[in-house]
Image (cartoon, rainbow, N blue to C red; front, side, top):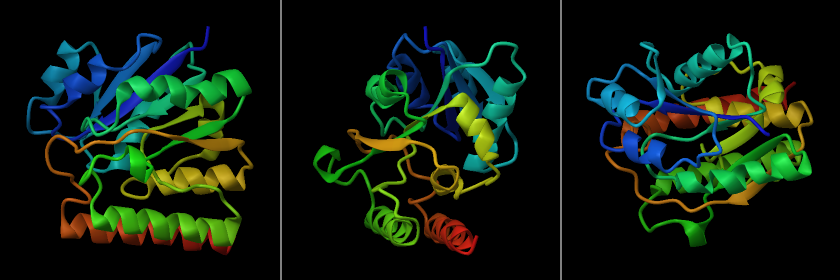
Length: 229
């Protein structure tokens, strides 16, 4: 049986984290919530919902993801697949089944959940998010012949392939770094259309001018860094 672990980075997601955890399919072996220095009841609510809770005091999406990976690396039995999903309830956790299906049935290495327009709730992505995704994926297509259309955070990857990528970004560039390294390492990948709704609470990235600017710089920085390698 395929062993699946889920990593959920979470910063002040007390109102949503329980909903996310409860709707993740029972086929998942372990749900790992990485509390990224929250000041609310994220930890309490995640534990109540049955998740393993870790704490990463250094703020940053990448820091949280790396904490989860490090925890898994120290376990005696490793999962076959790692799934990343946000803790804000914008994704539909039950769609995890179709995210991992190409890996389990077709032996693909990496799957990104693409938030296509017809499956997105109106207002669930800000104009800057939509534009940023289009720009980033267009550049990856032109520079690397990539077929990505989104930098969606809901994604699945074989554990051994994830480790081989040697992920390093600590903040906003995590998703694009993974996709660029997947291209460089010739991982077999695909996108699966997923539904997307308005998140619970305010986004820490797209919900602020500072977050949007820094995310854009990080994403473009990674793309141009790899274009010269």
